[in-house]
Length: 503
Image 1 (spheres, rainbow, N blue to C red):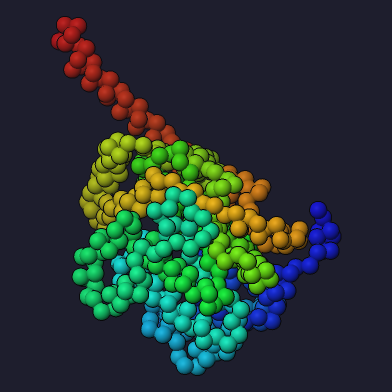
Image 2 (image 1 turned 90 degrees about the horizontal axis):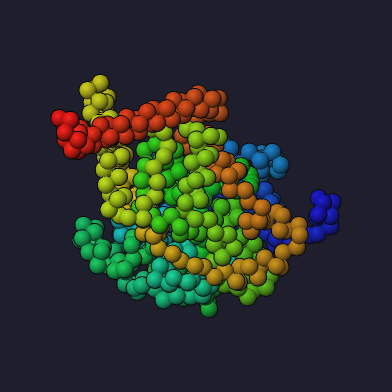
């Protein structure tokens, strides 16, 4: 269908947002930034976006917004809609972790009098966050946001960003409400008065079967929202593992190296050589732009049709890519197309299905080389860094292994049905499926953007990185050959030579 054909259709989603005032928490986070950019670009008729921002590093909220808007993510929207479009984003000083959200009376009045649609995206996504902080952010913060929503005079919708991985005891997750692992109100009361050291000491008992504070507190927070469904216009969104942008505005863009991206970069730098993982299993991924489109469209769907309340924003029911496929594609991209600067060793290694073999390899190829390199650094007068990095990698493995070696399936029938309501034009503007994705191209874009925006490695360094990669390949081959010849020599000297009477 040509662009001319698409123009015959209306953009009902953008029309819905026209003249509306939105209130967004977590707007300075990964998902939040992409959400704000997409709203300004595709739903530019929006009246105002109130963004809850806390003061950070002596920077006032409006200064932080200005800094974010000056980043490359917002170049396209400013080019298409004009520089003045960013003036629609207004900072509201506050903090989800604080009592009453840290709002002044004036700002609270602004929100309650003007906000029509609320996107609650703020949360801590650290898996190892201390329980007290995780509860204050992911549970009490939700309760305070719901209290605020009840005061909003013009509220049309409260959209809560949950996660597909907060009901881990459910191997098949449907788009329905599940009971919480504990009473969220009692958990909030407990952490409010109890000393943090005591909370940390009893955290394993409180978590029970939950592997980390993130999943536990997100489940509690979601239950608070579900309890208010009969009193407030609410939708719950459950994205899976959110990964860098697929299509727009910058293919491959991210502002962090959490999750699979971090593993890819660690492997690309040659510092990750082994992982304990059933490589035949698959995970569920959601490019952030697809997730943001789904957030925007789900709002339109609920406000127009009012049927669906819970959306599983997942992909594995349609597209499955195994861990081994990810590793092979990532290795090909980094070794042949988009090498990183200053690799410690030629990228290699593998995933191990045996924990014992993984542990042996971890000490042989992670810990021992780190000790050797750090010793050399100390002798040369530099600060040791590699052993500390390997300890952080080991801690990250603890989280990765749980999710990589378990399997969940997500039923997203309601979300799939909602897609059918979009006309051809809306399906292009708010793409909510993965049709047409080229994995190699996508991973190439991801590594490229990580080089540029995270590692600060400009494109002109790629040829030198490619040359260095070739050198490291020869070093890797020669080292392996040397070990092989040494092993054969030991066999000859200690076993075969005595047997043949040649001693």
